[in-house]
Image (tube, rainbow, N blue to C red):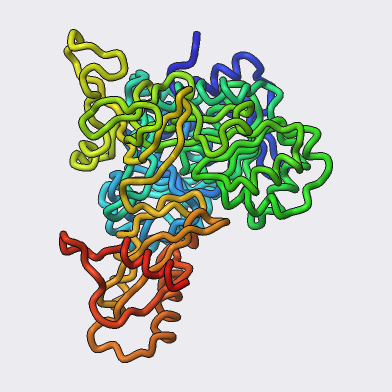
Length: 537
């Protein structure tokens, strides 16, 4: 039978080829038989800990076997996994734990210790599972809320544990992504969303059992986690890589004979500057870009390095897992295009009145189909802004259908050409896209205000060849602050590095004398500030 639930991707592959390698981390390999058994055991352990149907399990780890087992095990137990980016600071982790109402946290001893008092503000958290820790470490950390457990202890609890009933419409995961108005918000995805997305992407990438995919992106990204799901659909092997330098990626590709790599533009830009080992081109079957536009020069450099590898240029929404791709055969014919909808999805370009745009006419990208998520976690207002009923008569739906269909309205402005290929024009909101991450200007500003060193502040993105956009902040000194401009800017950068993950730290902080400019609504005018700064530079 075809897989309908996320964890079925593993058990189905195990049924076909139990001895085939599923995961590789460092020098260790885990086959599909043992991966499926570990997922079942972890699911049973969570049930024994009292995980309710739909209960959230946060996973804050680097890429390792336990990370994969915990995510798929939480889904198999009838809960939802919440992957937390390993680069986040404790304050950001605390927000995700509180906002998701996480019942359990899977992490390691060092990360657990760094949370400190953060856990006291997470009242829903009842259990912490320490990956890689033995019984002695578990006993040393036990004694206060939340309860701590060694990894092996959870696996040993599984015997006789009955699981919750799960169907494909059930919540499976919550992926946190930055929003335009402040802290990250959780996108809720169902089993159906993730399985349909995996089957679609594996289909157009032509993934097969002898593929070796390198998981270089964070598993908290939809595209990062997709490396697992697409590989498992095909029964392929995934190499889990925690890298420090781009050269480490090339070394892993050469050592593991990687056949497929998906990355974001800044990493591709860095990789394109390096000298590639000759052997990689002999086994790399494709390379794929996501998370932003790949500069043409970078693409041409990669194609020169890898003449036999097929380039796939992709565009996706966390709110709908995947959206479009440009087939390799169209890359030269349609420079700048984000392609067409992936199999199993439909992408529309709509006017503000709900009508469909004509070729060449700019409109909002709207996605419908099995990949459309379940909304934003516990946020009806934001959900209503993005997840809306499809207008009558659009997408082949006539007035005879009584139940409205919910689609994702992306906020991105695009246009169609005469043959139905899409071209990205811009965003309607002020989100910053840097290093493959979406960064909220409001979140950067909130952290700057928390330093108590600034009065007003505005963050925005400026075009950057390698990053997509660089983050710039313009601030006014706090009342009574007598520090000179240079010292204040240096102190703010230092505070940002303590309080933010590296990708969020502004590359430039300018000190502004007098009030910041306002727009007609009385809000700080980021666009004018960005335009003025571009003119000066």
